[in-house]
Amino acid sequence: MPERPRTPRGARPRVASVALAAAGALLLGACGGQNDDASSPPSPPDRGTDTAATASTPPPRTVSPTGKAEPAGTVPAPDPAPTSTPAPDPTPTSAPPPAQRPAAPARCTADHLALSLGRIDAGAGQRHAPLVFTNTGSTTCALRGYPGVSLLDSSGDRVGRPARRAGSMLPPVELDPGESAFASLHTVGRGVTDKPCWPRADQVQAYPPGSTRALRTPAAPFEVCGDTFDVSAVEPGRHP
Image (cartoon, rainbow, N blue to C red; front, side, top):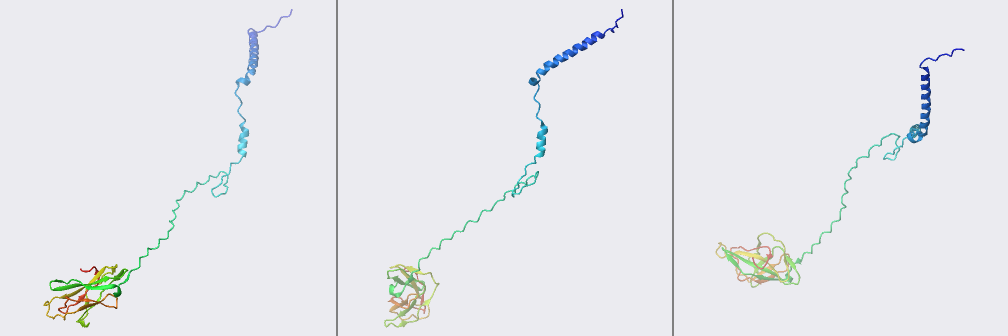
């Protein structure tokens, strides 16, 4: 009988181990395949397509503030800083017309005036007498300036010379009906100078300022001495 070849010691157990390991691997693979869908995480989306789409799509073009399209990738310039606009000048308004001044009253004339001689004021050798003009009319009138004054005797002849103007011109005096203004007659007392006195006059004749018609009033007891006879400009009132 032929002799069987001998298997080396330890060979059979190694072959059996290899077979068992292969069978176990098959079993594990079968079990693992059933749970792949449940336990494995989902595959990420294919980024190759998105990358290609992104690469092929040009970036949007920007529009400049002037309305022109800027090339892709251009950073638009910042808007200019707002500048302050000066406020417009206010519209000039037309000034109201100046208030019209009331018309100045008419000049007093001899037709609407009465003449009288006031009380003589004596002091320090000087003599002053107010020559009074009174408005006898029905409207307001005005006097301004110096009256023309002379002394007359009983025959109406002039005594001495006309009165000289003395003092400064004064503002106009407005006389309502019944109101008065006066001019001051001036002379000196007897013996103040070496010059004699004039003959006594009977009347004082006066032309209101600006008038060509004269008024008359009794002159007594006014007497001119020392060759001094002056008259002032008219001022309001009946006496100083």
